[in-house]
Image (cartoon, rainbow, N blue to C red):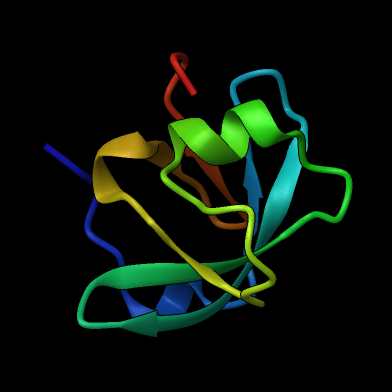
Length: 80
């Protein structure tokens, strides 16, 4: 069960369960948020999110990784 992503999420910060900045939602297409990762984001988290190590500017955020959506941020579930 994932959260419903709408165009309202565009521009929101994505943070992990500890509040670490993961990236910014740059676009939303067909209910999927596309995130520009923080340049300091570690490879382990990128791997868990299914994001490659290539130089793509944005990556799709899996809806099942989302724990909560607030007015300002998208919070990842604890296991991410």
